[in-house]
Image (tube, rainbow, N blue to C red):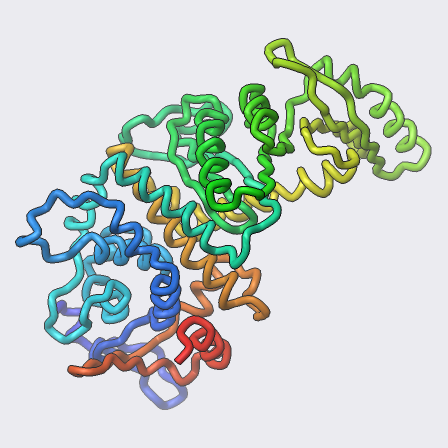
Length: 442
């Protein structure tokens, strides 16, 4: 016991009353609400299915912590706000963390894995295991629908994942002006299908066509009649991807960079918007379409023109598509909503530490990205299935964590029971009761 633990802590008095504190409160946890995530995991089988994907080279006779325990320890800790392996030096004896990892929280029981054990686990992962784990995310996405959807939109986007150490395959990126990775994400609404780590010295669209093809094949295997639409910004406008979509009945709505030819074709619409702005002084928007093909393309395609004029001048945008809707509907109804995906990526990186790719080995960093993705899948399922109709139905990960997971509790264990005495002053008691009834009905 440290000197701090032995001594009383003294604070400023409250009127005539002295205020002190110590560390003799017993077996307490600050993450009592983490049991909600355990119920989600038991419903969808996330950690079990991921564990089945991992090849374990260890001698079974000497294994203390099996793969599912290690995965659960890391995934649940990330979901509850613990990004570092060093955090597990104390978390390994936390009673709630032990319950989440399906480990008996008895006094004196074997603690969970240490940071060094978890580090070895991350660094022995293989590419084959990562590929199978990525497939689990897609399978869980399919299972999340009660009935086959008529149409789904797959949002593709890349982002920078800044690195600071000597990681494998790190490169300087001129646009972001720092050393980084360039992970590729695929979402359908708020549901995550793919999180793929890439070096940053590549075309932003690198591997997107291959991933799209894999997703289309798997989704059509489950839902033969589903209409799939590929959506992305100008970084994903590659004619081979568009050609694949045309040949495989996949819709697309993809931004395309402005150039001299497109600007010349759109000049009549740009002039109309400028003239209307001059007359009214108000923002003007005009929507129309042109036929366009770059020299490398296999054929002409439909390009939607948004000719907008603001006080700062012209703001013209172009979107290439094979959908048949009106130009304004294409832009406002189909293309613009892709911006919501950026909020999902922020949840991944800011709320679930997907950018904590500080391992030296590139494959280990891909594994960390998948661990953060798994934590997101748990919380997204909780938000979609249990929080619907509540004040937190649209809450961000950080808000859900603060309001629902961070609950003080005293943990008592016996031969037959594990009992949590939650804080009597917890402000969301009624909501917690509703969530438990939805996730773990008696």
